[in-house]
Length: 168
Image 1 (tube, rainbow, N blue to C red):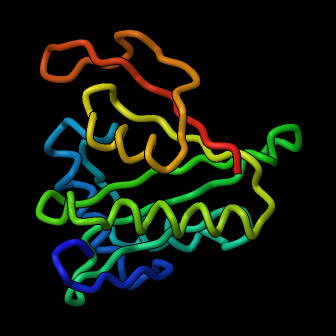
Image 2: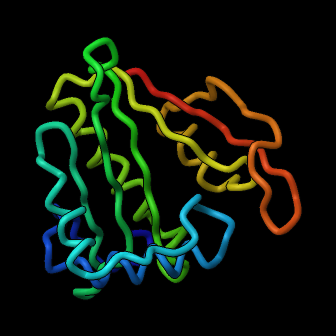
């Protein structure tokens, strides 16, 4: 990473359930970066959710630094036959580990997984206020395809929902 530390990216396992719930709740509590605000699943439910990623139509990767899960990216190939060439991705990284290259590393891994499965188009959604993420996505070849104006309300302020895509 940019700060010299090593990040390990690997497929999530059921043993990551607690860490993933903690991280999503931490990022969600900030209210600025992801749609989820709080996961209320039990550990059992979270493990079932993790098991749902079959590595054929979906995958969940985690990023570890010093043995701690600090970020994740999930990818899901569209379920409908007419859209099977498209995969959606979502990413979350806890605050203390942003801006040091983990986002790019997770995105690269997710895009490589998509290419191995002949996905042609990667899509994602991002709040218009998340300018750092948008800049990363653009550097990685994503372009804005649509903007849903004032689609969300965060702390009383309207925020656009930006739909971005990259042809692989």
